[in-house]
Image (cartoon, rainbow, N blue to C red; front, side):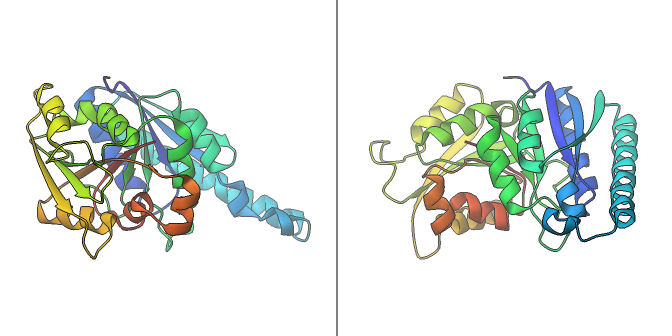
Length: 277
C-alpha cells in the first residue's frame, strides 16, 4: 500500500502545530495529499444539559469564539502546507469528534491524530483517541503531545505478539518500514506467542526481510513491569523514533477494565506510534 492520501486531525490545542508538522513531513516523504480536518467542538462550548440555563448571547459568543479558533487553525495549516509545497485541502465540520473523525478517515490511507493531553482543554480526549482507533478501520498514527523528531521513522520498533492486529499493523506500516534505517521486532513473552518458534519474532522478521527491510528480532520475558512499560523502556534504550503495534488484541471490555498495552502506550508514549485494530 502506498501512502498517497493522508488526513490529520487539527484542533486548537497546544500540540496541533507539531502534529501538522509531522503530517507534512510524512506527506512530503511519500508525495501524498494531506487533508486537515477541524471538528467544531460544540459539546465543549456549552454542555447540553446546562445550555437551556445560559443566556443566548453567551452561547453565541462562545460559538463565535470557536469559529475564530477554527479560522486561526485553518490559517496555520494552509500556511504550513504552502511552505512545505504539499498538496492539501481544509475541512471544517460539525459533529461529535470521534465518529466524525472516523468517518472522514475511512477515505484516506492513514489518519494522523494527537495524544490526549489532560492539561489542555482543547486537546482530543483519551476516549476519543481510543474510539477512533477502534472504529476507523485505517491505520492511525498517534503523535505525542510533546511532538515528534524531525526524522521520525528511521529507527522503528515493531511490537509483535503473533496476533491479527499486530500483523495488520505491520502490513499497513510497510511504506514506513521500507524507508527505515533500522527495524527492531520485539516480542514480550507472556505465553501468547506459543507456536511461533523459539524466537517469536523470527518468522515475521524473515517476511519483512523479503521486503528488503533491515530487521532484527528479539524476545524478552514478561517481568515485574507491564508489557506496555517494557515496550517503552526498550524504545528508550534503542532510541526508537516510531513504534508499530496492533491495538486492542483482547476484548475492549477487558482492556477498559484492566488497562492493557494499548492504553498504556496511549497514556505514556514519547514517540509517534502507529496503531491498527
